[in-house]
Image (cartoon, rainbow, N blue to C red):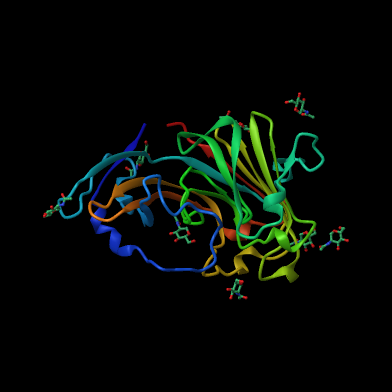
Length: 280
Ligand SMILES: *[C@@H]1O[C@H](CO)[C@@H](O)[C@H](O)[C@H]1NC(C)=O
Ligand SMILES: *[C@@H]1O[C@H](CO)[C@@H](O)[C@H](O)[C@H]1NC(C)=O
Ligand SMILES: *[C@@H]1O[C@H](CO)[C@@H](O)[C@H](O)[C@H]1NC(C)=O
Ligand SMILES: *[C@@H]1O[C@H](CO)[C@@H](O)[C@H](O)[C@H]1NC(C)=O
Ligand SMILES: *[C@@H]1O[C@H](CO)[C@@H](O)[C@H](O)[C@H]1NC(C)=O
Ligand SMILES: *[C@@H]1O[C@H](CO)[C@@H](O)[C@H](O)[C@H]1NC(C)=O
Ligand SMILES: *[C@@H]1O[C@H](CO)[C@@H](O)[C@H](O)[C@H]1NC(C)=O
Ligand SMILES: *[C@@H]1O[C@H](CO)[C@@H](O)[C@H](O)[C@H]1NC(C)=O
């Protein structure tokens, strides 16, 4: 197993926090922890590219307050333009579940317990968070940064399932794999391009499939909105909590150490993306 050792000094990163943005966000996040402290979430990227194989350390200003070990080599991804065999037909399946609350919401999310433990970047998840935006959030933190950290995104975009009665978010978990399908969903600002239909499947052995049935527009041409990026790929972060010694604030710093971007041009009707976890 190969590790990257990262040392960090929290204070060095706090200036990056950008407060007070009241733009549209995913609904219903806890703003406080149990003790009544306010959460302040900060995101950061781990930039040390030079230590891909190593256990190289880096300290900032000599202040090394934490040591974290992370798995650094993760997945091999493959794009298949003729990938219909990765599509799972769950629409008519008797055991599939439609999620009415998500199907009638914009910027909605909902926790889903898994029928199996899913290995994601080498750690096991019991649950994921479904969203209306074409992606899953792959951790338990109640954070509004879900579009930026720890996402699994067949097609993250500003979809609004509440715009059409034909839009649904449905899942099928058979204990070996979970398929999540965003069916006939429309873009919030661009309903005229027509409905999208795509899914992702998480397999018990860690393999991830993205499959696209209907993509009516070049995904490459969709701009990021201020409150909602457009992304295809997977990402993981580790999280450090720090209580402010004086004020009732808990800083939650999300360090993104891996972001696998899939080129948006490969997202077309009938295509698929497969991620195989590398043995560690
Ligand atoms: C990392 O290790 C692999 C084999 O384990 C080797 O092929 C590769 O060149 C190494 N990369 C670096 C940057 O040292
Ligand atoms: C960080 O280093 C500075 C000086 O090098 C020191 O004054 C400060 O107390 C250190 N902070 C922590 C949290 O150790
Ligand atoms: C639906 O789930 C039940 C209980 O888990 C199982 O026995 C049955 O085989 C499933 N049906 C199909 C069509 O897979
Ligand atoms: C829903 O689907 C039906 C049948 O495909 C279609 O006739 C209808 O126009 C659709 N409704 C909306 C709001 O898109
Ligand atoms: C898209 O919708 C959002 C929220 O309704 C709005 O703030 C934004 O200006 C819109 N963008 C465009 C390009 O229409
Ligand atoms: C994991 O499961 C998928 C789907 O069943 C399969 O295609 C893949 O070969 C499996 N990978 C391994 C390493 O067994
Ligand atoms: C994808 O399929 C839909 C119908 O299923 C079609 O309207 C659309 O033009 C197709 N898009 C491309 C890029 O082929
Ligand atoms: C992935 O894309 C984002 C922009 O969406 C970019 O900021 C990031 O650097 C890219 N990551 C990699 C590893 O290419």
